[in-house]
Image 1 (tube, rainbow, N blue to C red):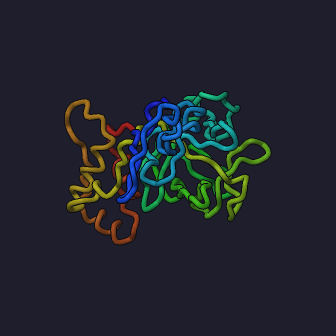
Image 2: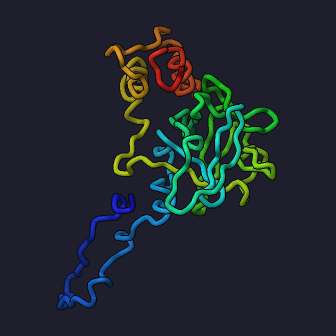
Image 3: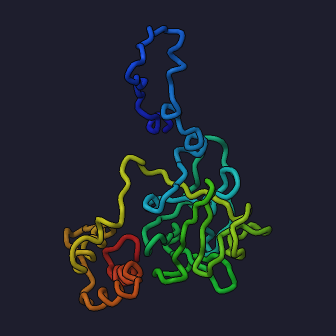
Length: 256
């Protein structure tokens, strides 16, 4: 997939007063710029590139700790770190999660077992919830080129000595540094802003359209009314309320 991320070649900028130089074939390779370089990191991870902004945490997501080793979902609702992959290999199916917005600068993750990733009060990351609440919301933190994931307990995600995924530290050290990776096209970056245009009824329709299957061509929206949404917007938990209302609709492929 490396060719998909190669940038378009640009011509050299000639400032006023500069004399154009004769082109020579032997200097052709020197004209390449950093924009022409292929994303080698993406290639080494099987086309999974490093996410560096909240808008890109959607769809298929993998979380890497160490070198090409990803968080893996177990069938008992717990998580561990998978075996390292070789160069050119991406995450396994058990290491791929579905991500979507869950509030301002926050996201939620759903495992392949159909459960949301949350955190217990004793700091263990679990995947046993059928809906998204405060404990199932995560916040990405980017600083100095490094990435960490903050839980609702204000502690950072890490992998302990037993290879279990936990949230124990209130600061992000080397053990908490990870990479959030995506394999979707980087040409289109969707934002939450477009979803929230219009009145609250339109907001919910726009939100639901992203997730329902429409097998019978009918849109199903929660009939709880807009009063609940108005209250949620004022309290700053509009996305959480939308998720809860959406989870009650059987046509939704993420909230069964």
